[in-house]
Image 1 (cartoon, helix red, strand yellow):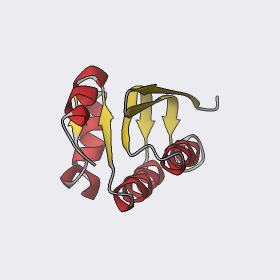
Image 2 (cartoon, rainbow, N blue to C red):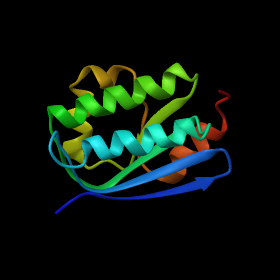
Image 3 (cartoon, helix red, strand yellow):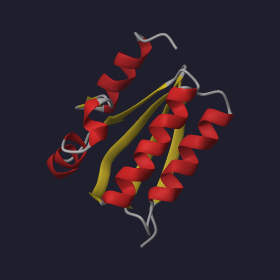
Length: 118
């Protein structure tokens, strides 16, 4: 089943919610495209709501790194929120875990980003 996405703005913070898998062949490229579209709109504080993502592979992590870099190049910040333990471990054990902020909930991520100036 293809991944599904919803995008919503909360003040100067954009939430991208993904439902499905973030793999090389399913969902990851689309996730990157949604992030890229928001950056092109001038949105530079982005939360990825991963509460309904049940799997990420190395290709998915690669697209996440590329999305992170795209936002950072515009002096923005991309964070992930509401990760399953398995996804948290996958990100923590990758290079991305050293630079990307992870929040327990979308609300905490929004609050954290509202304190950040970009």
